[in-house]
Image (cartoon, rainbow, N blue to C red; front, side, top):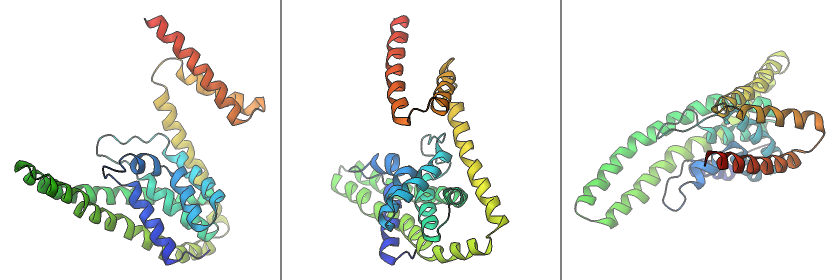
Length: 252
């Protein structure tokens, strides 16, 4: 699959939205679209394979299940991993496991982009402070909405657009060169990486006694009952509501 310039620009713009912090879209990008299962699906839509984009994005998302962004820190950028990892996997015909191996170093690169943006944003904040002292709200809004967002778009969209446009042939050539045992090893490593995300999620869940037991019950129920995930999720929601209601009544 060849990624056109238009598709590359759209993917770069999508990554900008995952970092977006403008008043009109706060939360939509940095919370929702940044998740690989979401941005991977949109990437698949842009590249013409929504189903495979969803599958690859969901697989990459398992790696980031336990990641928490505290304050202004970003331990790893799931957005760039989801977008570029999915795009390169689709364009080169790689598996979802191989896409995870691609997404890991990209997440680190995204952290560097985030740090650069936050550092330069200090200048824009100082400009806003200067006009806040004199009560000039129009110029405050200008510095927030225009210079800051133009810089944010350049530092996020351009690198991702270049990565997906120029990187696809490189990735395809690398996969061809590594075909055989090396590629099987990378795929195996990619298959193990989601376990790290699940382990981090389990660590977060195990903060109160009994919580981890429900997770184990759900796992065995899905594995051995033959019920679909949707049916189990409905039962789990009802059970959680009843349990919480009884638990809070006891505490009262």
